[in-house]
Length: 225
Image (cartoon, rainbow, N blue to C red; front, side, top):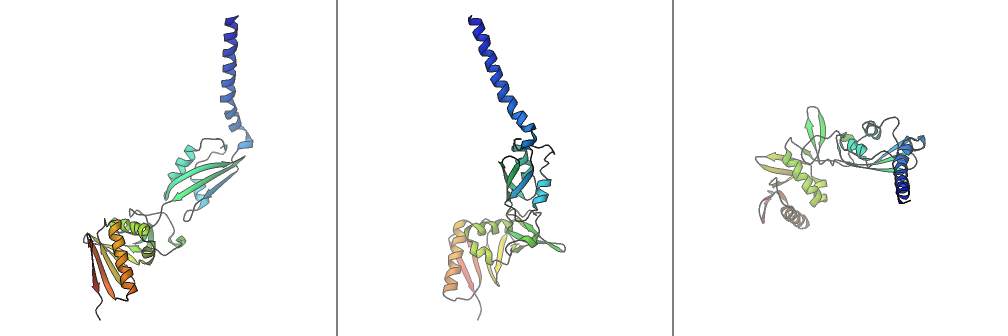
């Protein structure tokens, strides 16, 4: 009797396991859950159709398929730094994309290209930029420092016309005025420069260059009358 009960219990467990493992597979094979629409959100520079085309979704893809491979494919697209997949049943795949943030423009031959905080070229059309970006030379230091300024003082960043690597320093120009900084300028240094700029502006002091290369000190070179 005990042997029969044990066998019956094992059979029940095996059946439950088969149902648990089999139903998801059967559901994925059902046309009811076939992907009929792919929506891409978060794009400013890339084209949604081009992004979908790079995902490599098979014709029989299901909304129940694992999201990992799709997210990995999206993150592998140049200009994309992050992606998250969600679903809207029964047949819509939603992809939230995080694009790389362009911090500057660089002149290459006869065209301008966007670059990220490392100075790497981004596959973005500059005409799609929502704001005017500073122009830099080919150095990485200028791009990295601009990205730092963007975070610390967005108002100052928005007013910057250009930045250049010059003999180990970075020179930032805005409306004919220059700020000279070390490439690794700290948040405290940038805030000090910001305070000096604000003071000079509030007191109508004409200046041509601020030198913020020295820890704890900021030097101002006033404009000649």
